[in-house]
Image (cartoon, rainbow, N blue to C red; front, side, top):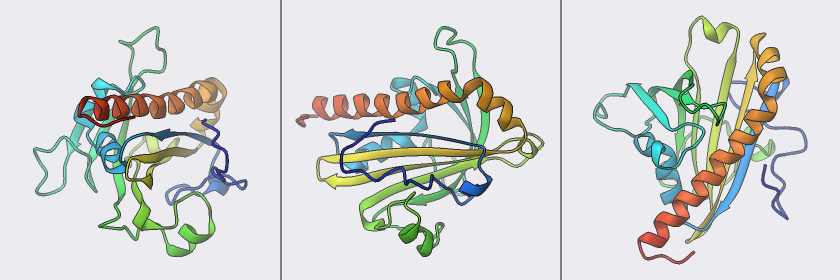
Length: 217
């Protein structure tokens, strides 16, 4: 996880999500990076799962299962989108994928802020950016079903505006359920590396895209 001077994130008490509060979490994973590109551009890359193959080493492929009304042809995540991540846990075996069925539970932008996270949590917890006018946020959780009885996962992305040309991306996931003890024992270190890789890949992609479009990094 990137360690930024003057940053108080993650909070000392640990991270939380609305789907899985910290007191229920068995495993917490996070990553972050500062990116020399506009926050809106970076957030667009996070939502545009149709282009993950261009930059996302950990999750190069996403299958969209169901989009909300009016977005059937979109390759972007929307509030209510149901989708499957096909992640690569072992970089030496890129053809071996692990599938995770997920759904978007929160979407917030400076011009269309969400009320998904209660104001008291925003202002007092430290996991989230309190000022919704300066952050783009998307959250997803695993879909309901048999697998969810043994492993529940809730994840958030924030892209925080630092200036017109710079932002910080933060991503974190909490997991709970009996199966998580096995996942934690086998894969916690790998997942921590993969979450940071996700942020680093996003940084590289967005900065290269901005340079190609005539911006300076």
